[in-house]
Length: 375
Image (cartoon, rainbow, N blue to C red; front, side, top):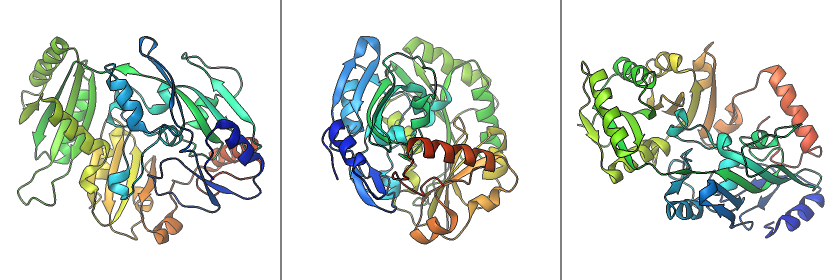
Protein backbone atom coordinates (compact mmCIF):
# COMPACT_ATOMS: atom_id res chain seq x y z
CA UNK A 1 0.00 0.00 0.00
CA UNK A 2 1.48 3.27 -1.15
CA UNK A 3 -0.97 6.19 -1.14
CA UNK A 4 -0.09 9.31 -3.12
CA UNK A 5 -2.39 11.73 -1.29
CA UNK A 6 -3.63 12.30 2.24
CA UNK A 7 -7.14 11.43 1.09
CA UNK A 8 -5.99 8.09 -0.29
CA UNK A 9 -4.18 7.40 2.99
CA UNK A 10 -7.35 8.10 4.97
CA UNK A 11 -9.38 5.79 2.70
CA UNK A 12 -6.86 2.98 3.08
CA UNK A 13 -6.81 3.25 6.87
CA UNK A 14 -10.61 3.43 7.10
CA UNK A 15 -10.85 0.20 5.11
CA UNK A 16 -8.22 -1.77 7.02
CA UNK A 17 -9.21 -4.96 8.78
CA UNK A 18 -5.76 -6.09 9.87
CA UNK A 19 -2.63 -4.43 11.33
CA UNK A 20 -0.11 -2.61 9.16
CA UNK A 21 3.58 -1.81 9.43
CA UNK A 22 4.15 1.88 8.67
CA UNK A 23 7.31 2.83 6.78
CA UNK A 24 8.74 5.94 5.19
CA UNK A 25 12.04 5.50 3.41
CA UNK A 26 12.61 2.01 4.82
CA UNK A 27 15.90 3.00 6.47
CA UNK A 28 15.18 1.79 10.03
CA UNK A 29 14.83 -1.92 9.37
CA UNK A 30 11.76 -2.12 11.63
CA UNK A 31 9.80 -5.33 11.17
CA UNK A 32 6.44 -6.37 12.51
CA UNK A 33 3.11 -8.01 11.74
CA UNK A 34 0.84 -6.92 8.93
CA UNK A 35 1.23 -5.55 5.44
CA UNK A 36 3.50 -2.59 4.71
CA UNK A 37 1.89 0.85 4.54
CA UNK A 38 4.36 3.23 2.91
CA UNK A 39 4.03 7.01 3.12
CA UNK A 40 6.89 7.54 0.65
CA UNK A 41 4.33 8.58 -1.97
CA UNK A 42 3.29 11.56 0.17
CA UNK A 43 6.27 13.64 -0.88
CA UNK A 44 7.10 17.27 -1.50
CA UNK A 45 7.74 20.58 0.23
CA UNK A 46 4.38 22.34 0.50
CA UNK A 47 5.53 25.66 1.94
CA UNK A 48 8.90 27.19 2.71
CA UNK A 49 9.17 30.72 4.07
CA UNK A 50 12.85 31.45 4.82
CA UNK A 51 11.99 34.82 6.36
CA UNK A 52 9.57 33.18 8.78
CA UNK A 53 11.96 30.26 9.46
CA UNK A 54 9.13 27.87 8.63
CA UNK A 55 8.87 24.80 6.41
CA UNK A 56 5.89 22.53 5.73
CA UNK A 57 6.45 19.19 4.01
CA UNK A 58 4.57 15.98 3.33
CA UNK A 59 5.66 13.11 5.55
CA UNK A 60 7.33 11.09 2.79
CA UNK A 61 9.59 13.95 1.67
CA UNK A 62 13.25 12.86 1.68
CA UNK A 63 15.32 14.61 4.33
CA UNK A 64 17.98 15.25 1.67
CA UNK A 65 15.46 17.24 -0.39
CA UNK A 66 14.58 19.38 2.61
CA UNK A 67 18.21 19.93 3.57
CA UNK A 68 19.06 20.98 0.00
CA UNK A 69 16.23 23.53 -0.05
CA UNK A 70 17.32 24.91 3.31
CA UNK A 71 21.01 25.04 2.34
CA UNK A 72 20.14 27.16 -0.71
CA UNK A 73 18.82 29.78 1.73
CA UNK A 74 21.64 29.39 4.27
CA UNK A 75 19.41 27.50 6.71
CA UNK A 76 19.27 24.04 8.29
CA UNK A 77 17.45 21.56 10.50
CA UNK A 78 19.15 22.58 13.73
CA UNK A 79 18.34 19.33 15.56
CA UNK A 80 20.84 17.47 13.35
CA UNK A 81 18.86 14.30 12.46
CA UNK A 82 20.82 11.07 12.34
CA UNK A 83 21.13 8.98 9.17
CA UNK A 84 20.72 5.35 10.30
CA UNK A 85 21.65 3.66 7.04
CA UNK A 86 25.32 3.12 7.82
CA UNK A 87 24.92 1.35 11.17
CA UNK A 88 21.76 -0.54 10.16
CA UNK A 89 23.03 -1.54 6.72
CA UNK A 90 19.82 -0.35 5.09
CA UNK A 91 19.13 1.51 1.86
CA UNK A 92 16.41 3.92 0.82
CA UNK A 93 16.02 7.60 1.68
CA UNK A 94 15.32 8.90 5.21
CA UNK A 95 12.03 10.81 5.22
CA UNK A 96 10.99 13.75 7.36
CA UNK A 97 7.98 11.81 8.65
CA UNK A 98 10.27 9.04 9.87
CA UNK A 99 12.52 11.60 11.56
CA UNK A 100 9.55 13.10 13.41
CA UNK A 101 7.96 9.74 14.25
CA UNK A 102 11.18 8.61 15.94
CA UNK A 103 12.12 12.09 17.27
CA UNK A 104 15.53 11.64 15.65
CA UNK A 105 17.96 14.22 17.04
CA UNK A 106 21.73 14.63 16.99
CA UNK A 107 24.47 16.00 19.25
CA UNK A 108 23.35 19.62 18.82
CA UNK A 109 20.26 19.00 20.97
CA UNK A 110 22.31 19.97 24.02
CA UNK A 111 22.03 23.55 22.77
CA UNK A 112 19.23 23.65 20.20
CA UNK A 113 16.84 20.98 21.46
CA UNK A 114 15.40 17.80 19.97
CA UNK A 115 13.28 17.32 16.85
CA UNK A 116 10.03 17.70 18.84
CA UNK A 117 11.17 21.14 19.98
CA UNK A 118 11.15 22.32 16.34
CA UNK A 119 7.84 20.71 15.43
CA UNK A 120 5.18 23.38 14.90
CA UNK A 121 2.32 21.27 13.62
CA UNK A 122 1.28 17.88 12.27
CA UNK A 123 -1.39 16.35 10.10
CA UNK A 124 -2.02 12.64 10.47
CA UNK A 125 -4.61 9.91 9.95
CA UNK A 126 -5.88 8.22 13.10
CA UNK A 127 -7.00 4.62 13.52
CA UNK A 128 -10.53 5.35 12.31
CA UNK A 129 -9.35 6.94 9.07
CA UNK A 130 -9.93 10.53 10.13
CA UNK A 131 -7.51 13.29 9.13
CA UNK A 132 -6.42 15.19 12.24
CA UNK A 133 -4.58 18.52 12.34
CA UNK A 134 -2.83 19.95 15.37
CA UNK A 135 -0.57 22.96 15.78
CA UNK A 136 0.26 25.30 12.95
CA UNK A 137 3.04 27.44 11.58
CA UNK A 138 3.79 29.35 14.76
CA UNK A 139 5.27 28.06 18.01
CA UNK A 140 2.00 27.84 19.96
CA UNK A 141 0.10 24.97 21.60
CA UNK A 142 -3.65 24.37 21.62
CA UNK A 143 -6.01 23.07 24.26
CA UNK A 144 -6.52 19.35 24.80
CA UNK A 145 -3.84 16.85 23.76
CA UNK A 146 -0.56 18.37 22.62
CA UNK A 147 -0.59 16.10 19.60
CA UNK A 148 2.49 17.73 18.12
CA UNK A 149 4.60 16.52 21.04
CA UNK A 150 2.79 13.17 21.27
CA UNK A 151 3.43 12.29 17.64
CA UNK A 152 7.17 13.00 17.94
CA UNK A 153 8.68 9.75 19.18
CA UNK A 154 5.49 7.69 18.91
CA UNK A 155 6.96 5.54 16.10
CA UNK A 156 3.69 5.56 14.19
CA UNK A 157 1.74 3.82 16.95
CA UNK A 158 -0.77 6.67 17.39
CA UNK A 159 -1.38 7.62 13.77
CA UNK A 160 0.13 7.86 10.29
CA UNK A 161 1.79 11.22 9.71
CA UNK A 162 0.86 12.89 6.44
CA UNK A 163 2.38 16.37 6.90
CA UNK A 164 4.72 18.16 9.31
CA UNK A 165 5.47 21.84 9.95
CA UNK A 166 8.93 22.67 11.25
CA UNK A 167 10.86 25.63 12.54
CA UNK A 168 14.24 25.99 10.82
CA UNK A 169 17.27 28.08 11.72
CA UNK A 170 20.12 29.86 9.90
CA UNK A 171 23.38 28.02 9.40
CA UNK A 172 26.20 29.37 11.57
CA UNK A 173 28.87 31.48 9.97
CA UNK A 174 31.69 29.55 11.64
CA UNK A 175 32.20 26.20 13.40
CA UNK A 176 35.18 25.20 15.55
CA UNK A 177 35.88 21.96 17.41
CA UNK A 178 38.39 21.47 20.21
CA UNK A 179 39.87 17.96 19.99
CA UNK A 180 41.72 16.00 22.68
CA UNK A 181 43.47 12.76 21.68
CA UNK A 182 43.59 9.70 23.92
CA UNK A 183 41.66 11.06 26.90
CA UNK A 184 40.43 8.45 29.36
CA UNK A 185 36.89 8.49 30.69
CA UNK A 186 37.73 10.53 33.78
CA UNK A 187 39.53 13.25 31.83
CA UNK A 188 36.80 13.32 29.18
CA UNK A 189 34.17 13.61 31.90
CA UNK A 190 35.88 16.67 33.36
CA UNK A 191 36.24 18.28 29.92
CA UNK A 192 32.55 17.81 29.19
CA UNK A 193 31.41 18.99 32.60
CA UNK A 194 33.54 22.13 32.47
CA UNK A 195 32.63 22.93 28.85
CA UNK A 196 28.89 22.47 29.24
CA UNK A 197 28.66 24.44 32.48
CA UNK A 198 30.67 27.31 30.99
CA UNK A 199 28.96 30.38 29.46
CA UNK A 200 30.49 29.70 26.04
CA UNK A 201 27.47 28.08 24.34
CA UNK A 202 28.86 24.67 23.47
CA UNK A 203 26.77 22.98 20.75
CA UNK A 204 28.26 19.50 20.99
CA UNK A 205 30.31 17.38 23.40
CA UNK A 206 31.26 13.85 22.42
CA UNK A 207 33.90 11.11 22.60
CA UNK A 208 34.73 8.83 19.68
CA UNK A 209 36.45 5.52 20.53
CA UNK A 210 39.83 4.31 19.39
CA UNK A 211 39.51 3.22 15.73
CA UNK A 212 39.73 -0.56 15.62
CA UNK A 213 41.18 -0.51 12.10
CA UNK A 214 44.21 1.54 13.20
CA UNK A 215 46.46 0.02 15.90
CA UNK A 216 47.98 3.47 16.47
CA UNK A 217 44.63 5.23 16.63
CA UNK A 218 43.43 7.03 19.74
CA UNK A 219 40.10 8.17 21.09
CA UNK A 220 38.95 11.70 20.32
CA UNK A 221 37.15 13.93 22.79
CA UNK A 222 35.27 16.75 21.05
CA UNK A 223 33.78 20.09 22.10
CA UNK A 224 32.03 22.21 19.45
CA UNK A 225 31.10 25.89 19.27
CA UNK A 226 29.20 27.60 16.44
CA UNK A 227 28.07 31.09 15.49
CA UNK A 228 29.39 34.33 14.05
CA UNK A 229 33.12 34.29 13.34
CA UNK A 230 34.13 36.85 15.98
CA UNK A 231 31.97 35.15 18.59
CA UNK A 232 33.44 31.73 17.85
CA UNK A 233 37.00 33.08 18.01
CA UNK A 234 36.26 34.66 21.38
CA UNK A 235 34.60 31.56 22.82
CA UNK A 236 37.38 29.28 21.58
CA UNK A 237 39.97 31.54 23.22
CA UNK A 238 38.04 31.45 26.50
CA UNK A 239 37.71 27.67 26.35
CA UNK A 240 41.46 27.38 25.76
CA UNK A 241 41.97 29.46 28.90
CA UNK A 242 39.51 27.25 30.76
CA UNK A 243 41.44 24.15 29.72
CA UNK A 244 44.92 25.57 30.27
CA UNK A 245 45.78 22.56 32.45
CA UNK A 246 44.39 20.08 29.93
CA UNK A 247 45.03 21.66 26.56
CA UNK A 248 43.36 20.26 23.44
CA UNK A 249 45.62 18.70 20.82
CA UNK A 250 44.03 20.70 18.01
CA UNK A 251 41.28 23.14 17.13
CA UNK A 252 39.47 22.15 13.94
CA UNK A 253 38.14 25.17 12.08
CA UNK A 254 37.90 23.78 8.53
CA UNK A 255 34.25 23.26 7.55
CA UNK A 256 34.48 19.86 5.86
CA UNK A 257 36.60 18.36 8.64
CA UNK A 258 34.08 19.57 11.21
CA UNK A 259 31.26 18.02 9.21
CA UNK A 260 33.07 14.67 9.09
CA UNK A 261 33.81 14.71 12.82
CA UNK A 262 30.26 15.44 13.88
CA UNK A 263 28.72 13.18 11.27
CA UNK A 264 30.73 10.38 12.88
CA UNK A 265 29.08 11.19 16.20
CA UNK A 266 25.62 11.82 14.76
CA UNK A 267 25.52 8.69 12.58
CA UNK A 268 27.55 6.43 14.94
CA UNK A 269 29.91 5.89 12.01
CA UNK A 270 32.62 3.94 13.93
CA UNK A 271 30.10 1.08 14.36
CA UNK A 272 29.15 0.86 10.68
CA UNK A 273 29.92 -2.52 9.12
CA UNK A 274 30.89 -4.02 12.50
CA UNK A 275 29.36 -7.20 13.91
CA UNK A 276 27.41 -7.16 17.16
CA UNK A 277 24.38 -5.42 18.59
CA UNK A 278 24.06 -1.65 18.91
CA UNK A 279 22.40 -0.21 22.00
CA UNK A 280 21.48 3.38 22.82
CA UNK A 281 21.46 4.31 26.49
CA UNK A 282 19.89 7.57 27.63
CA UNK A 283 21.06 8.48 31.09
CA UNK A 284 21.82 11.43 33.31
CA UNK A 285 25.20 12.99 32.41
CA UNK A 286 26.27 12.55 36.03
CA UNK A 287 25.90 8.76 35.61
CA UNK A 288 27.59 8.50 32.21
CA UNK A 289 31.03 7.87 33.67
CA UNK A 290 29.74 5.10 35.94
CA UNK A 291 28.26 3.32 32.95
CA UNK A 292 30.74 3.95 30.13
CA UNK A 293 33.74 3.54 32.40
CA UNK A 294 32.64 0.16 33.76
CA UNK A 295 30.94 -1.59 30.83
CA UNK A 296 33.65 -3.50 29.00
CA UNK A 297 32.41 -2.66 25.52
CA UNK A 298 33.10 -0.07 22.84
CA UNK A 299 31.22 3.21 23.27
CA UNK A 300 30.48 6.44 21.44
CA UNK A 301 29.65 9.04 24.04
CA UNK A 302 27.32 11.95 23.31
CA UNK A 303 27.64 13.71 26.63
CA UNK A 304 25.50 16.72 25.80
CA UNK A 305 22.55 14.54 24.91
CA UNK A 306 23.14 12.12 27.77
CA UNK A 307 23.61 9.26 25.30
CA UNK A 308 25.91 6.28 25.16
CA UNK A 309 26.00 4.26 21.95
CA UNK A 310 27.41 0.80 22.69
CA UNK A 311 28.60 -1.99 20.41
CA UNK A 312 28.13 -5.24 22.35
CA UNK A 313 28.25 -8.94 21.47
CA UNK A 314 25.05 -10.67 20.47
CA UNK A 315 23.13 -12.15 23.39
CA UNK A 316 24.30 -9.54 25.92
CA UNK A 317 21.47 -7.73 27.74
CA UNK A 318 22.66 -4.19 28.43
CA UNK A 319 19.48 -3.33 30.33
CA UNK A 320 20.39 -5.86 32.98
CA UNK A 321 23.81 -4.25 33.28
CA UNK A 322 22.24 -0.84 33.91
CA UNK A 323 21.10 -2.12 37.29
CA UNK A 324 19.39 0.41 39.52
CA UNK A 325 20.64 3.45 37.63
CA UNK A 326 17.86 5.63 36.26
CA UNK A 327 18.15 5.31 32.49
CA UNK A 328 16.53 4.12 29.29
CA UNK A 329 18.19 1.53 27.03
CA UNK A 330 17.01 0.90 23.45
CA UNK A 331 18.19 -1.93 21.22
CA UNK A 332 18.86 -0.23 17.88
CA UNK A 333 20.41 -3.04 15.84
CA UNK A 334 20.23 -6.78 16.45
CA UNK A 335 19.11 -10.07 14.99
CA UNK A 336 15.51 -11.19 15.38
CA UNK A 337 16.39 -13.54 18.25
CA UNK A 338 17.77 -10.70 20.38
CA UNK A 339 14.95 -8.32 19.44
CA UNK A 340 12.48 -10.98 20.56
CA UNK A 341 14.44 -11.75 23.74
CA UNK A 342 15.17 -8.18 24.85
CA UNK A 343 12.66 -6.00 23.01
CA UNK A 344 13.49 -2.89 21.01
CA UNK A 345 12.49 -0.37 23.68
CA UNK A 346 13.07 -0.15 27.42
CA UNK A 347 10.04 -1.43 29.37
CA UNK A 348 7.98 1.46 30.71
CA UNK A 349 7.15 1.78 34.41
CA UNK A 350 3.67 0.41 35.11
CA UNK A 351 1.95 3.82 35.53
CA UNK A 352 3.49 5.17 32.32
CA UNK A 353 2.70 1.97 30.42
CA UNK A 354 -0.94 2.36 31.45
CA UNK A 355 -1.03 5.92 30.10
CA UNK A 356 0.62 4.81 26.85
CA UNK A 357 -1.95 2.03 26.43
CA UNK A 358 -4.78 4.51 27.01
CA UNK A 359 -3.36 6.85 24.37
CA UNK A 360 -3.07 4.04 21.84
CA UNK A 361 -6.64 2.99 22.61
CA UNK A 362 -7.79 6.58 22.11
CA UNK A 363 -6.00 7.18 18.80
CA UNK A 364 -5.89 3.66 17.36
CA UNK A 365 -8.73 1.68 18.99
CA UNK A 366 -8.47 -1.17 16.47
CA UNK A 367 -4.75 -1.68 17.13
CA UNK A 368 -3.79 -1.25 13.49
CA UNK A 369 -0.56 0.75 13.64
CA UNK A 370 2.77 -1.01 14.31
CA UNK A 371 1.27 -3.32 16.97
CA UNK A 372 3.70 -4.54 19.61
CA UNK A 373 6.46 -2.14 18.58
CA UNK A 374 6.34 -0.02 21.72
CA UNK A 375 4.43 -2.30 24.08
